[in-house]
Length: 365
Image 1 (cartoon, rainbow, N blue to C red):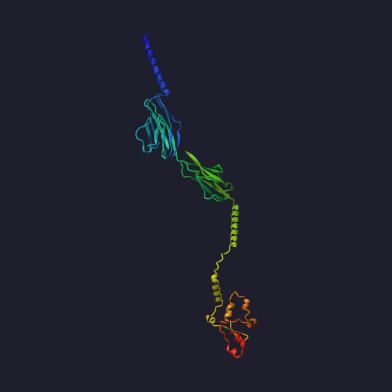
Image 2 (cartoon, rainbow, N blue to C red):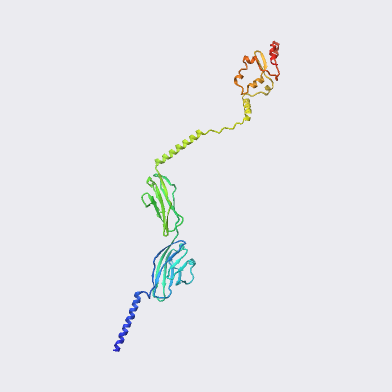
């Protein structure tokens, strides 16, 4: 009986060991590292941070060996560590920008556009047969500045040539554009043509229905910005002509009124120069001979000659009425001629020989 019991015990022991081995393979907790990745796509902003999060599980108590690589034509090792202790020397572009956590998560600081790409991670433990593997895609983009719409003219004439609206901005990567008319999305239609990148909007054969407010929105993986609204004003041809003609008539009336009300400024009068200008003016009209002015002039009336040169000069004074100058030859003037005491008396010898009355010569003494 004892010889029969021994083979049966060995058979039972081998079956138990087989079951244990099978159970360890099926459970996967002893011979492999189980890895989970919550998010396989991470979006980062230029100058910001990116957390490439992973998790692993293992029955082993040993520290994991973690290795991160960036896919390029030739894979680039980003970091390799045992637990949180980095092994070796980091590449220059990753120095002071890398942090590794115990669960294998990688944190990148001060992101650059060159950090964009797919990252492969491997976590291995000595006691485990299989290594945990996974990959995460990181996109790095620049934030968008506020766009603005450039248009040659904010007002156009109906049925005119094409109108171009260009959506421009300074910063931003991987941008897409959308146009809105009156707050509603605008798509390619017969008269509204968008460029392949949808940055340029062309309106052909502008109509009155195109009179509206237009905006453009720029988007990229890290955000979006909308431009300030711009108003496109469309005029009818007849309305434009009425506006121009009305403005022209109003301008013409204004100019005529200004010309009618304008008077030239008066020149200032110089009182001290009036006598000279009057004297010289009259001198030009009737110049005097200096020789004649030095000698007294004789006048004859009814056979009587007298000195009248001084009297004539006094008659040229404009303050005296013209009628007085015309009354020289009147009888009353001859009966009572003026007496000149300061002037010498001249009598004609012919008058003296003809026996002119004595009272005549006596009167002019």
